[in-house]
Image (cartoon, rainbow, N blue to C red; front, side):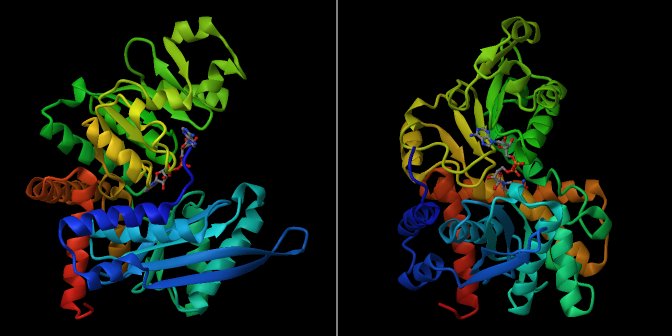
Length: 431
Ligand code: NAD
Protein backbone atom coordinates (compact mmCIF):
# COMPACT_ATOMS: atom_id res chain seq x y z
CA UNK A 1 0.00 0.00 0.00
CA UNK A 2 1.36 3.44 -0.84
CA UNK A 3 1.50 6.17 1.79
CA UNK A 4 -1.16 8.81 1.25
CA UNK A 5 0.00 12.18 -0.06
CA UNK A 6 -3.10 13.79 -1.56
CA UNK A 7 -1.65 17.29 -2.04
CA UNK A 8 1.44 15.95 -3.78
CA UNK A 9 -0.85 13.91 -6.03
CA UNK A 10 -2.79 17.07 -6.89
CA UNK A 11 0.47 18.90 -7.68
CA UNK A 12 1.67 16.05 -9.93
CA UNK A 13 -1.55 16.23 -11.96
CA UNK A 14 -1.48 20.04 -11.98
CA UNK A 15 2.12 20.18 -13.24
CA UNK A 16 1.44 17.59 -15.93
CA UNK A 17 -1.51 19.59 -17.31
CA UNK A 18 0.34 22.91 -16.89
CA UNK A 19 3.27 21.61 -18.92
CA UNK A 20 0.96 20.39 -21.73
CA UNK A 21 -0.63 23.83 -22.11
CA UNK A 22 2.59 25.73 -21.30
CA UNK A 23 0.91 27.56 -18.44
CA UNK A 24 2.64 30.77 -17.31
CA UNK A 25 4.73 30.66 -14.14
CA UNK A 26 2.55 33.27 -12.41
CA UNK A 27 -0.66 31.33 -13.12
CA UNK A 28 0.89 28.07 -11.97
CA UNK A 29 2.11 29.64 -8.72
CA UNK A 30 -1.42 30.90 -7.98
CA UNK A 31 -2.88 27.42 -8.48
CA UNK A 32 -0.18 25.65 -6.51
CA UNK A 33 -1.11 27.39 -3.28
CA UNK A 34 -4.47 27.94 -1.61
CA UNK A 35 -5.52 31.56 -1.17
CA UNK A 36 -6.24 31.07 2.55
CA UNK A 37 -5.67 28.39 5.16
CA UNK A 38 -7.70 28.67 8.37
CA UNK A 39 -6.81 26.47 11.32
CA UNK A 40 -9.09 26.32 14.35
CA UNK A 41 -8.64 24.94 17.84
CA UNK A 42 -12.21 23.86 18.48
CA UNK A 43 -13.30 23.49 22.09
CA UNK A 44 -16.57 21.85 23.11
CA UNK A 45 -18.02 20.23 26.18
CA UNK A 46 -18.41 16.47 26.40
CA UNK A 47 -21.49 14.89 28.01
CA UNK A 48 -19.41 14.47 31.18
CA UNK A 49 -18.89 18.23 31.34
CA UNK A 50 -15.21 18.00 30.39
CA UNK A 51 -13.72 20.44 27.84
CA UNK A 52 -12.41 18.70 24.71
CA UNK A 53 -10.22 20.29 22.05
CA UNK A 54 -9.94 19.14 18.44
CA UNK A 55 -8.22 20.56 15.35
CA UNK A 56 -10.29 21.94 12.50
CA UNK A 57 -9.45 23.39 9.11
CA UNK A 58 -10.94 25.38 6.29
CA UNK A 59 -8.86 25.76 3.17
CA UNK A 60 -9.92 28.28 0.52
CA UNK A 61 -8.10 27.43 -2.67
CA UNK A 62 -9.30 29.77 -5.42
CA UNK A 63 -12.18 32.24 -5.74
CA UNK A 64 -11.53 33.77 -9.17
CA UNK A 65 -14.75 32.22 -10.55
CA UNK A 66 -16.94 32.74 -7.47
CA UNK A 67 -17.28 32.09 -3.73
CA UNK A 68 -15.41 29.12 -2.27
CA UNK A 69 -17.44 25.90 -2.27
CA UNK A 70 -16.70 22.52 -0.75
CA UNK A 71 -17.62 20.03 1.93
CA UNK A 72 -16.61 19.57 5.54
CA UNK A 73 -15.43 16.13 6.62
CA UNK A 74 -15.17 14.68 10.13
CA UNK A 75 -12.52 11.98 10.10
CA UNK A 76 -9.75 10.84 12.45
CA UNK A 77 -7.28 10.97 9.54
CA UNK A 78 -8.40 14.36 8.18
CA UNK A 79 -5.35 16.65 8.11
CA UNK A 80 -4.19 19.81 6.38
CA UNK A 81 -2.52 17.95 3.49
CA UNK A 82 -5.75 16.15 2.65
CA UNK A 83 -7.99 19.21 3.08
CA UNK A 84 -5.66 21.31 0.89
CA UNK A 85 -5.82 18.70 -1.88
CA UNK A 86 -9.60 18.43 -1.69
CA UNK A 87 -10.00 22.23 -1.75
CA UNK A 88 -7.87 22.48 -4.90
CA UNK A 89 -9.85 19.69 -6.57
CA UNK A 90 -13.05 21.61 -5.75
CA UNK A 91 -11.78 24.69 -7.64
CA UNK A 92 -11.13 22.52 -10.68
CA UNK A 93 -14.38 20.55 -10.30
CA UNK A 94 -16.57 23.68 -10.23
CA UNK A 95 -14.65 25.00 -13.21
CA UNK A 96 -14.97 21.75 -15.21
CA UNK A 97 -18.78 21.84 -14.90
CA UNK A 98 -18.68 25.60 -15.45
CA UNK A 99 -20.61 26.72 -12.37
CA UNK A 100 -19.72 30.15 -10.92
CA UNK A 101 -17.99 28.94 -7.77
CA UNK A 102 -14.45 28.50 -6.49
CA UNK A 103 -12.97 25.74 -4.37
CA UNK A 104 -12.71 25.15 -0.63
CA UNK A 105 -12.78 22.28 1.83
CA UNK A 106 -13.05 21.85 5.57
CA UNK A 107 -12.30 19.16 8.08
CA UNK A 108 -12.10 18.25 11.74
CA UNK A 109 -9.67 15.60 12.93
CA UNK A 110 -12.05 13.45 14.95
CA UNK A 111 -13.66 10.03 14.85
CA UNK A 112 -17.31 11.15 14.99
CA UNK A 113 -18.42 7.62 15.91
CA UNK A 114 -16.87 8.23 19.33
CA UNK A 115 -19.19 11.18 19.99
CA UNK A 116 -22.77 11.20 21.23
CA UNK A 117 -25.32 13.09 19.16
CA UNK A 118 -25.23 16.05 21.55
CA UNK A 119 -21.41 16.15 21.52
CA UNK A 120 -21.50 16.04 17.72
CA UNK A 121 -23.88 18.99 17.73
CA UNK A 122 -21.75 21.05 20.15
CA UNK A 123 -18.59 20.36 18.14
CA UNK A 124 -20.26 21.17 14.78
CA UNK A 125 -21.67 24.43 16.16
CA UNK A 126 -18.32 25.40 17.72
CA UNK A 127 -16.52 24.88 14.39
CA UNK A 128 -18.98 26.99 12.46
CA UNK A 129 -19.16 29.66 15.18
CA UNK A 130 -15.39 30.14 14.99
CA UNK A 131 -15.50 30.28 11.18
CA UNK A 132 -18.33 32.80 11.26
CA UNK A 133 -16.64 34.98 13.92
CA UNK A 134 -13.44 35.01 11.88
CA UNK A 135 -15.33 35.95 8.71
CA UNK A 136 -14.48 32.67 6.96
CA UNK A 137 -18.00 31.54 5.96
CA UNK A 138 -20.70 33.57 4.25
CA UNK A 139 -23.31 33.21 1.53
CA UNK A 140 -21.19 35.25 -0.90
CA UNK A 141 -17.86 34.13 0.50
CA UNK A 142 -17.54 30.46 1.36
CA UNK A 143 -20.34 27.92 1.24
CA UNK A 144 -19.67 24.51 2.83
CA UNK A 145 -21.59 21.24 2.33
CA UNK A 146 -21.52 17.68 3.72
CA UNK A 147 -18.64 15.32 3.05
CA UNK A 148 -17.34 12.16 4.75
CA UNK A 149 -19.26 11.57 8.03
CA UNK A 150 -21.18 14.86 7.90
CA UNK A 151 -24.85 14.97 6.92
CA UNK A 152 -27.93 17.22 6.47
CA UNK A 153 -28.55 17.41 10.25
CA UNK A 154 -25.01 18.73 10.80
CA UNK A 155 -25.55 21.28 8.00
CA UNK A 156 -28.75 22.40 9.79
CA UNK A 157 -26.87 23.00 13.08
CA UNK A 158 -24.13 24.89 11.27
CA UNK A 159 -26.59 27.11 9.38
CA UNK A 160 -28.45 27.82 12.63
CA UNK A 161 -25.20 28.82 14.36
CA UNK A 162 -24.33 31.14 11.49
CA UNK A 163 -27.77 32.78 11.44
CA UNK A 164 -27.68 33.27 15.23
CA UNK A 165 -24.44 35.21 14.85
CA UNK A 166 -25.76 37.28 11.93
CA UNK A 167 -29.16 37.95 13.50
CA UNK A 168 -30.99 37.18 10.23
CA UNK A 169 -31.66 34.27 7.87
CA UNK A 170 -28.98 33.20 5.43
CA UNK A 171 -29.79 29.63 4.32
CA UNK A 172 -27.45 29.88 1.31
CA UNK A 173 -24.41 29.82 3.62
CA UNK A 174 -24.38 26.03 3.52
CA UNK A 175 -25.81 23.35 1.20
CA UNK A 176 -26.86 19.74 1.65
CA UNK A 177 -29.44 20.87 4.24
CA UNK A 178 -32.64 18.97 5.08
CA UNK A 179 -35.43 19.75 2.58
CA UNK A 180 -37.56 21.38 5.30
CA UNK A 181 -35.04 24.17 5.83
CA UNK A 182 -33.86 24.97 2.33
CA UNK A 183 -32.34 21.77 0.96
CA UNK A 184 -32.82 20.92 -2.71
CA UNK A 185 -34.77 18.04 -4.16
CA UNK A 186 -32.41 15.66 -5.95
CA UNK A 187 -29.37 16.51 -3.78
CA UNK A 188 -29.23 13.15 -1.96
CA UNK A 189 -28.49 11.20 -5.17
CA UNK A 190 -27.01 14.01 -7.29
CA UNK A 191 -23.43 12.69 -7.25
CA UNK A 192 -24.53 9.30 -8.55
CA UNK A 193 -27.01 10.76 -11.03
CA UNK A 194 -24.35 13.12 -12.39
CA UNK A 195 -21.87 10.23 -12.57
CA UNK A 196 -24.38 8.20 -14.51
CA UNK A 197 -25.01 11.00 -17.02
CA UNK A 198 -21.25 11.02 -17.62
CA UNK A 199 -21.14 7.24 -17.98
CA UNK A 200 -23.93 7.39 -20.57
CA UNK A 201 -22.00 9.93 -22.61
CA UNK A 202 -18.81 7.90 -22.29
CA UNK A 203 -20.54 4.69 -23.40
CA UNK A 204 -21.72 6.52 -26.51
CA UNK A 205 -18.11 7.39 -27.36
CA UNK A 206 -17.10 3.73 -27.15
CA UNK A 207 -20.32 2.69 -28.93
CA UNK A 208 -21.66 0.52 -26.13
CA UNK A 209 -25.23 0.30 -24.88
CA UNK A 210 -26.00 0.28 -21.13
CA UNK A 211 -27.59 -3.16 -21.57
CA UNK A 212 -24.22 -4.51 -22.81
CA UNK A 213 -22.28 -2.96 -19.93
CA UNK A 214 -21.11 -4.95 -16.91
CA UNK A 215 -20.24 -2.96 -13.79
CA UNK A 216 -18.47 -3.66 -10.47
CA UNK A 217 -18.84 -1.05 -7.72
CA UNK A 218 -16.48 -0.50 -4.81
CA UNK A 219 -18.50 1.11 -2.01
CA UNK A 220 -22.18 0.76 -1.20
CA UNK A 221 -22.74 4.02 0.71
CA UNK A 222 -24.41 7.18 -0.52
CA UNK A 223 -22.56 7.44 -3.85
CA UNK A 224 -22.23 3.69 -4.62
CA UNK A 225 -25.74 2.54 -3.67
CA UNK A 226 -27.57 5.30 -5.58
CA UNK A 227 -25.29 4.73 -8.55
CA UNK A 228 -26.09 1.00 -8.53
CA UNK A 229 -29.80 1.78 -8.53
CA UNK A 230 -29.65 4.37 -11.32
CA UNK A 231 -27.37 2.27 -13.55
CA UNK A 232 -29.47 -0.86 -12.98
CA UNK A 233 -32.67 1.01 -13.90
CA UNK A 234 -31.00 2.10 -17.14
CA UNK A 235 -30.26 -1.53 -18.00
CA UNK A 236 -26.60 -1.87 -16.94
CA UNK A 237 -25.55 -5.17 -15.38
CA UNK A 238 -24.29 -4.70 -11.81
CA UNK A 239 -22.33 -7.90 -11.33
CA UNK A 240 -20.35 -7.12 -8.13
CA UNK A 241 -20.50 -4.69 -5.22
CA UNK A 242 -18.42 -4.26 -2.06
CA UNK A 243 -18.52 -2.39 1.23
CA UNK A 244 -15.86 -2.04 3.93
CA UNK A 245 -16.26 -5.70 5.01
CA UNK A 246 -15.87 -7.23 1.53
CA UNK A 247 -18.08 -7.84 -1.46
CA UNK A 248 -20.44 -10.08 -3.39
CA UNK A 249 -20.29 -11.12 -7.04
CA UNK A 250 -23.17 -12.64 -8.96
CA UNK A 251 -22.42 -16.21 -10.07
CA UNK A 252 -23.91 -15.94 -13.54
CA UNK A 253 -25.95 -12.80 -14.21
CA UNK A 254 -26.45 -9.46 -12.52
CA UNK A 255 -27.90 -8.27 -9.20
CA UNK A 256 -31.36 -6.93 -8.55
CA UNK A 257 -30.54 -3.88 -6.42
CA UNK A 258 -33.20 -4.60 -3.78
CA UNK A 259 -31.39 -7.92 -3.12
CA UNK A 260 -28.18 -6.06 -2.25
CA UNK A 261 -30.08 -3.88 0.23
CA UNK A 262 -31.67 -7.03 1.71
CA UNK A 263 -28.24 -8.71 2.13
CA UNK A 264 -26.80 -5.61 3.78
CA UNK A 265 -29.76 -5.25 6.11
CA UNK A 266 -29.79 -8.93 7.09
CA UNK A 267 -26.03 -9.35 7.51
CA UNK A 268 -24.92 -5.85 8.59
CA UNK A 269 -22.67 -5.89 5.50
CA UNK A 270 -23.01 -7.39 2.00
CA UNK A 271 -20.77 -10.32 2.91
CA UNK A 272 -22.25 -10.73 6.39
CA UNK A 273 -25.43 -12.20 4.93
CA UNK A 274 -23.42 -15.22 3.75
CA UNK A 275 -20.41 -15.48 6.05
CA UNK A 276 -19.52 -15.30 9.71
CA UNK A 277 -15.82 -14.52 9.92
CA UNK A 278 -14.08 -16.94 7.55
CA UNK A 279 -16.99 -19.42 7.55
CA UNK A 280 -19.31 -18.98 4.57
CA UNK A 281 -22.60 -20.78 3.92
CA UNK A 282 -22.05 -22.32 0.47
CA UNK A 283 -25.66 -23.56 0.17
CA UNK A 284 -27.02 -20.09 0.83
CA UNK A 285 -24.56 -18.56 -1.64
CA UNK A 286 -25.56 -21.05 -4.37
CA UNK A 287 -29.26 -20.49 -3.70
CA UNK A 288 -28.78 -16.78 -4.22
CA UNK A 289 -26.21 -17.34 -7.01
CA UNK A 290 -23.64 -15.28 -5.13
CA UNK A 291 -19.87 -15.61 -4.67
CA UNK A 292 -18.25 -13.74 -1.80
CA UNK A 293 -15.19 -11.69 -2.89
CA UNK A 294 -12.60 -9.72 -0.96
CA UNK A 295 -12.26 -5.95 -1.42
CA UNK A 296 -9.10 -6.46 -3.45
CA UNK A 297 -10.64 -9.22 -5.62
CA UNK A 298 -13.50 -6.91 -6.60
CA UNK A 299 -10.99 -4.42 -7.99
CA UNK A 300 -9.48 -7.09 -10.25
CA UNK A 301 -12.73 -8.30 -11.86
CA UNK A 302 -12.99 -8.38 -15.65
CA UNK A 303 -15.85 -5.91 -16.18
CA UNK A 304 -16.60 -3.11 -18.61
CA UNK A 305 -16.66 -0.44 -15.92
CA UNK A 306 -15.18 -0.43 -12.43
CA UNK A 307 -16.88 2.27 -10.35
CA UNK A 308 -14.81 3.49 -7.39
CA UNK A 309 -17.16 4.91 -4.77
CA UNK A 310 -15.42 4.39 -1.44
CA UNK A 311 -11.98 5.70 -0.55
CA UNK A 312 -9.03 7.61 -1.97
CA UNK A 313 -5.81 5.92 -3.10
CA UNK A 314 -7.33 2.46 -3.66
CA UNK A 315 -5.69 1.91 -7.06
CA UNK A 316 -1.96 2.37 -6.63
CA UNK A 317 1.37 1.10 -7.98
CA UNK A 318 0.99 -2.29 -6.28
CA UNK A 319 -2.36 -3.22 -7.81
CA UNK A 320 -2.81 -1.11 -10.98
CA UNK A 321 -1.25 -3.81 -13.10
CA UNK A 322 -3.87 -6.32 -11.95
CA UNK A 323 -6.86 -4.25 -13.08
CA UNK A 324 -8.83 -6.00 -15.82
CA UNK A 325 -11.74 -3.55 -16.08
CA UNK A 326 -11.88 -1.80 -19.46
CA UNK A 327 -12.74 1.58 -17.93
CA UNK A 328 -12.84 3.20 -14.47
CA UNK A 329 -15.35 5.78 -13.24
CA UNK A 330 -14.20 7.73 -10.16
CA UNK A 331 -17.16 8.63 -7.95
CA UNK A 332 -14.85 8.84 -4.91
CA UNK A 333 -12.31 11.66 -4.63
CA UNK A 334 -8.77 10.66 -5.60
CA UNK A 335 -9.18 6.85 -5.76
CA UNK A 336 -6.44 6.42 -8.40
CA UNK A 337 -2.93 7.70 -7.67
CA UNK A 338 -0.91 9.48 -10.41
CA UNK A 339 1.53 6.54 -10.52
CA UNK A 340 -1.37 4.14 -11.06
CA UNK A 341 -2.75 6.44 -13.76
CA UNK A 342 0.42 5.94 -15.81
CA UNK A 343 0.18 2.15 -15.49
CA UNK A 344 -3.51 2.15 -16.45
CA UNK A 345 -2.84 4.38 -19.44
CA UNK A 346 -0.29 1.88 -20.76
CA UNK A 347 -2.94 -0.82 -20.39
CA UNK A 348 -5.41 1.37 -22.40
CA UNK A 349 -7.78 1.63 -19.45
CA UNK A 350 -9.67 4.91 -19.52
CA UNK A 351 -10.13 6.62 -16.13
CA UNK A 352 -13.05 9.07 -16.04
CA UNK A 353 -11.75 11.38 -13.31
CA UNK A 354 -13.39 12.49 -10.07
CA UNK A 355 -13.44 16.19 -10.99
CA UNK A 356 -15.87 15.34 -13.78
CA UNK A 357 -17.50 12.07 -12.67
CA UNK A 358 -18.57 13.14 -9.16
CA UNK A 359 -19.29 16.81 -9.93
CA UNK A 360 -23.06 16.18 -9.89
CA UNK A 361 -23.01 16.64 -6.11
CA UNK A 362 -21.56 20.15 -6.17
CA UNK A 363 -23.73 21.04 -9.15
CA UNK A 364 -26.95 20.34 -7.25
CA UNK A 365 -25.40 22.09 -4.22
CA UNK A 366 -25.03 25.08 -6.52
CA UNK A 367 -28.73 24.73 -7.45
CA UNK A 368 -29.56 24.71 -3.72
CA UNK A 369 -27.59 27.92 -3.23
CA UNK A 370 -29.35 29.55 -6.20
CA UNK A 371 -32.78 28.52 -4.82
CA UNK A 372 -31.91 29.84 -1.35
CA UNK A 373 -30.76 33.18 -2.71
CA UNK A 374 -33.81 33.63 -4.91
CA UNK A 375 -36.32 32.17 -2.45
CA UNK A 376 -37.44 29.70 -5.08
CA UNK A 377 -38.12 25.95 -4.74
CA UNK A 378 -37.46 23.84 -7.85
CA UNK A 379 -39.22 20.63 -8.80
CA UNK A 380 -37.16 17.46 -8.89
CA UNK A 381 -37.52 17.07 -12.66
CA UNK A 382 -36.23 20.59 -13.17
CA UNK A 383 -33.17 19.85 -11.00
CA UNK A 384 -32.38 16.68 -12.93
CA UNK A 385 -32.89 18.24 -16.35
CA UNK A 386 -30.52 21.08 -15.47
CA UNK A 387 -28.02 18.63 -13.98
CA UNK A 388 -28.08 16.50 -17.14
CA UNK A 389 -27.39 19.50 -19.34
CA UNK A 390 -24.49 20.71 -17.21
CA UNK A 391 -22.87 17.25 -16.98
CA UNK A 392 -23.28 16.56 -20.70
CA UNK A 393 -21.87 19.95 -21.67
CA UNK A 394 -18.88 19.37 -19.39
CA UNK A 395 -18.27 15.98 -21.00
CA UNK A 396 -18.42 17.50 -24.50
CA UNK A 397 -16.07 20.35 -23.46
CA UNK A 398 -13.64 17.81 -22.04
CA UNK A 399 -13.70 15.60 -25.15
CA UNK A 400 -12.81 18.59 -27.28
CA UNK A 401 -9.72 19.25 -25.13
CA UNK A 402 -8.84 15.56 -25.01
CA UNK A 403 -8.93 15.44 -28.81
CA UNK A 404 -7.03 18.73 -29.30
CA UNK A 405 -4.21 17.87 -26.90
CA UNK A 406 -4.33 14.06 -27.30
CA UNK A 407 -4.25 13.49 -23.54
CA UNK A 408 -6.02 11.06 -21.16
CA UNK A 409 -9.31 12.04 -19.51
CA UNK A 410 -7.79 13.27 -16.23
CA UNK A 411 -5.35 15.59 -17.95
CA UNK A 412 -8.10 16.90 -20.21
CA UNK A 413 -10.27 17.61 -17.14
CA UNK A 414 -7.37 19.40 -15.41
CA UNK A 415 -6.70 21.47 -18.54
CA UNK A 416 -10.38 22.41 -18.88
CA UNK A 417 -10.57 23.40 -15.21
CA UNK A 418 -7.27 25.28 -15.21
CA UNK A 419 -7.98 27.25 -18.40
CA UNK A 420 -11.28 28.60 -17.08
CA UNK A 421 -9.80 29.60 -13.71
CA UNK A 422 -6.78 31.23 -15.34
CA UNK A 423 -9.08 33.13 -17.69
CA UNK A 424 -11.03 34.46 -14.67
CA UNK A 425 -7.80 35.43 -12.86
CA UNK A 426 -6.61 37.29 -15.97
CA UNK A 427 -9.92 39.15 -16.32
CA UNK A 428 -9.62 40.21 -12.68
CA UNK A 429 -6.09 41.39 -13.26
CA UNK A 430 -4.70 38.93 -10.71
CA UNK A 431 -2.07 37.56 -13.08
P1 NAD B 1 -20.33 6.74 2.49
O1 NAD B 1 -19.65 6.79 3.80
O2 NAD B 1 -21.81 6.90 2.40
O3 NAD B 1 -19.99 5.34 1.76
C1 NAD B 1 -18.70 4.80 1.65
C2 NAD B 1 -18.83 3.31 1.32
O4 NAD B 1 -17.54 2.78 1.11
C3 NAD B 1 -19.47 2.48 2.43
O5 NAD B 1 -20.33 1.54 1.83
C4 NAD B 1 -18.28 1.74 3.05
O6 NAD B 1 -18.65 0.50 3.62
C5 NAD B 1 -17.43 1.54 1.80
N1 NAD B 1 -16.04 1.22 2.05
C6 NAD B 1 -15.20 1.72 2.99
N2 NAD B 1 -14.00 1.11 2.90
C7 NAD B 1 -14.08 0.24 1.86
C8 NAD B 1 -13.19 -0.68 1.26
N3 NAD B 1 -11.95 -0.82 1.71
N4 NAD B 1 -13.62 -1.42 0.22
C9 NAD B 1 -14.87 -1.31 -0.24
N5 NAD B 1 -15.77 -0.46 0.29
C10 NAD B 1 -15.38 0.30 1.32
O7 NAD B 1 -19.60 7.82 1.58
P2 NAD B 1 -20.10 8.46 0.20
O8 NAD B 1 -20.82 9.73 0.47
O9 NAD B 1 -20.76 7.41 -0.61
O10 NAD B 1 -18.70 8.86 -0.43
C11 NAD B 1 -17.85 7.91 -1.06
C12 NAD B 1 -16.77 8.66 -1.83
O11 NAD B 1 -17.41 9.51 -2.78
C13 NAD B 1 -15.87 9.59 -0.99
O12 NAD B 1 -14.60 9.62 -1.58
C14 NAD B 1 -16.51 10.96 -1.15
O13 NAD B 1 -15.59 12.00 -0.96
C15 NAD B 1 -16.94 10.84 -2.60
N6 NAD B 1 -17.99 11.79 -2.95
C16 NAD B 1 -19.23 11.70 -2.40
C17 NAD B 1 -20.17 12.64 -2.72
C18 NAD B 1 -21.58 12.55 -2.16
O14 NAD B 1 -22.41 13.39 -2.55
N7 NAD B 1 -21.90 11.56 -1.34
C19 NAD B 1 -19.86 13.72 -3.57
C20 NAD B 1 -18.58 13.78 -4.14
C21 NAD B 1 -17.66 12.81 -3.81
